[in-house]
Each structure stands twice: as structure tokens, then as C-alpha cells.
Amino acid sequence: MNAYRRFFPKRHTFLAVVHVVNKDQTLLNVRIALGEGADGVFLINHPPVPSRQLYHCYQHVREVFPDAWIGLNWLGLSPEEGLDMMQFQMNGMWVDNAGIREDSHGAKEAILFAEKRRRWEKEMKDYFFLLFGGVAFKYQQHIYDVGRVAQLAVPYVDVITTSGDGTGMAPDVEKIRVMKNAIGDHPLAIASGITPENVSRYMEHTDCFLVATGVSDSHIELNPGRVRKLANAFV
Image (tube, rainbow, N blue to C red; front, top):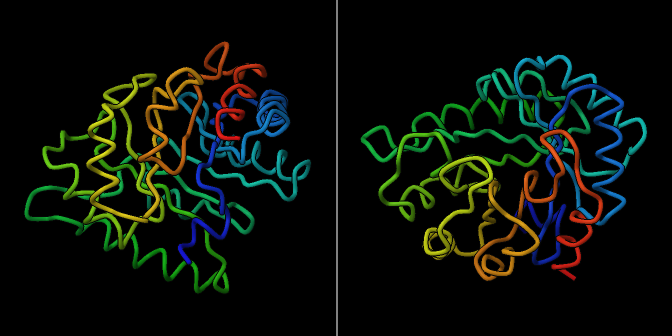
């Protein structure tokens, strides 16, 4: 069984994305996300919030929700630096760039990171997390053959994660279809532009939805009603 399905056996998964500012704000938004039906959360820090603050906010949330699925996106850190921040009970790590390229380097960067990750898992006595890796992702080098790079990512990325052209921008449905057809049963996630109103367009070709803007009142405030509306779309 794919590692992803050990955590999320349902056909579709909804992970609410919380932009971290401080402990109280983070906990409030996680309460909204989980209380209104999200399957888990990703915590993410945007400048000027440092990675250490993200770490402390995670710890605070974990004490309140010991069994929740919680992943982290260490913005401002390289994947290798983010891996150094990962600890037992952190369920997922999201990197915007999985290191898959169309040129002659191919998956070289992803291979090197996978080797480091295997050493980390051994040191952690085989504890593992899900790696959400950006492929054909916003603000990265443009990809011409999205199907090919998605296939290259399969051995190295637990959940291939893509997006539209920018924050809050939905991806082209054809792009998603091509990527999913290329990777088959391997999980595919969308991490921009999903809303309760448009999610049905992507369900056939997408396993997981990472959503912030489409269910928020502001950059740091989830909207309970919209979180519930999106969660209900998968019932």
C-alpha cells in the first residue's frame, strides 16, 4: 500500500493550510480546520515568521491535538534544512520544489534528498512522514512536459504536489489530467486556487487538496463556513 493511503484511505483528502503567526492564532485556525471537517492541516511560515516560530507553534498545536495529521512547510529553508527541523510525530513535510528537472540533471537533486531522508528515517528508528513535493509548481522554472516530470518524481515524492501559476490561482484542468494519467495510482495534490465552488472540476484527477485562500477571510484567518463547505464537497 502506498504510504499516503496508510494515513488517508478515502478517495479525496482535504488539508487546510494555516499561515502561522503566533501560537494562539495557529491554534485557533487549526481548531477551525479540524472542527469543520478538514482531514488534517499544513502549518506554513511566511517571512518574517522564522522557522523556529513555526516549530514552537507546531508543538503548541500538537499538545492540544495529539492524534491530528499535521504537516509543515518550512518556507525559507532548503529541503535539507527543513528535514533537519523534522521531529517525531510531524506527519508531513511540504517542499515547493521537489528537485525534478527537465534537463539532463533530471531527478538528481531528488535522489540526493531521498538518500538523506533514508538516513534520517533510520536514525529516527524507521519513523516516516509523507513528503509533498512541488512539481510544475508556482514560481518555479517552467515545465513543458508535465507528464514526464511527474513520472520522474514518483520514486522520490510520496505526494506529487502541483499548483496554478500563482498563489490563489487554480491550475488548468488539462494539466492536472495529464499529470495524473502519467502517474496512475500515485497520489497527486493541488496546492493553489481550490475553492468550494471549483473543486468538483478536479476531483476525477486529484487525490489531495491543500487549501488556504479559497477557505479564508484573510491571509491568516480561515473561514469556518467555507472550510465546512469544502469538506462537505467530499462527502
